[in-house]
Amino acid sequence: MPEPPLILIPPSEGKAPGGSGPAWAPSTMAIDLDDRRLAVMAALRSAMRRNEAQRQKLLGVKGDALAAATAANRTVAESPTMAAAQRFTGVLYDALDLPSLSAAARRRADSSVLVLSAVFGLVAPSDPIPDHKLKMSVSIGRMGKLSTWWRGPISAALSERAGGRAVWDLLPLEHSAAVDLGGVPRTTVVFLEPNARGELVAVAHWNKLLKGALVRHLLENPGTDAADLADWEHPEGFVLDADRTVVDGALTTLFMVRR
Image (cartoon, rainbow, N blue to C red; front, side):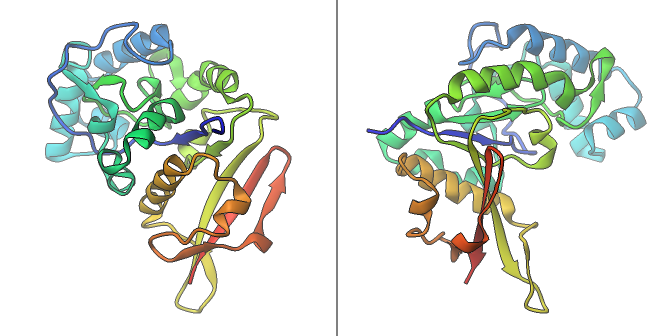
């Protein structure tokens, strides 16, 4: 059996509220970044004392969504938790649909999938986390821009786990800014579809859904490499165009084109 892949994905904008687990505590997550997590949570709670306009600018939401996000962030250190796989919602996680995977693939997910989080750094699917809202691209407190502040510890933790494994980097630019894997070989995927003029352009509006289905495939088929994707047709009708492959140092970019 091949070594399970390491798959890097973003969190979801939306989070399921509530939870039945105890409040977040150190030493409860797969990767120990607890000192940094505590620092971000403290800065986040402090930021929630700002006025409405300042909180709206920081969190990128307004109205009822701002009120809900503010309430969640103010109590991030004492509110109930649930497994990250249930906390994160949205199209990527809907397409991934972890509960419907085989038992082996679900077990594999917890050692393969890591979510880059502005508050928690690196999150495994079974890690217990509270409701929260914060983007990796923002600046907060004395930390400055979170992607820069997280980059060192996140990159070190990932480099330690990447040896001998296929690394699939499915992160958007906002979260890629928090990772520097240097010479670690890794693969990313770009989805292309024809526009109104018939020109191939990168998919934007449903990119997350496409990546969720790809992650599902990688978990069910852990030995998958670039060549293997040539035999796989994405559920949404995308196929690998091997001739478009770009290798830039340690990063290989694959292009899947909609038929």
